[in-house]
Length: 128
Image (cartoon, rainbow, N blue to C red; front, side):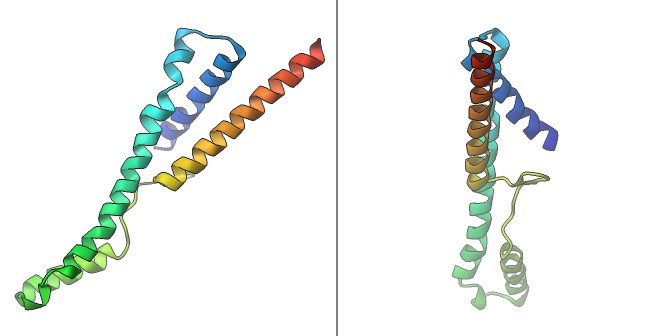
């Protein structure tokens, strides 16, 4: 998972950097949208899982589970205990996949791209 996410983030930044500098080829054009086609949907899926897992415990608690059989009450109790910790998709080095991670990664991604562009224009102006 770490390798996939690293690749999904590094290839588009290289392609975007080349695109901004005017080096447009088929590789850069095809690599550019990878972050929005792969990474952003993964973050939305992780956020959906987190939100849905929080709702499970609340839905079980809201039922009339106190009027059920003892075995059914035990199952409801176990479900509520398990749902007290939300389910997450995590990745080492990135954290829990969700919208906060998506926001911070995209912010860092654009900041890194901006730094690359500034560095390349500064280097080009020093050469002239």
